[in-house]
Image (cartoon, rainbow, N blue to C red):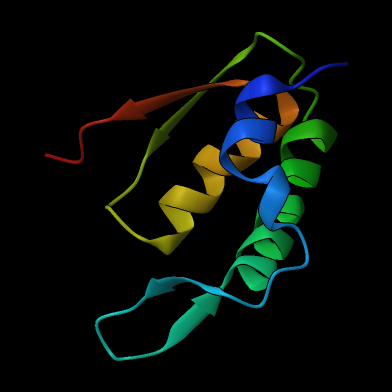
Length: 86
């Protein structure tokens, strides 16, 4: 299955050790580490039975994990439905 959104945003960075994020505590997250976490979330999404086009509603604070869940949704073709934490 073609996955143009994931391909455009992330595919060219697979295996890259370049920094994607610098956390408030100064820790640096590489594309490779981020995409590894994304793949783990994508496996959970698939294992839960969600399919392409299904919606995943998530109530989560702005964080590395939230971004990884979004990336996992682009990888699996699921729709990321962010719920306001307020």
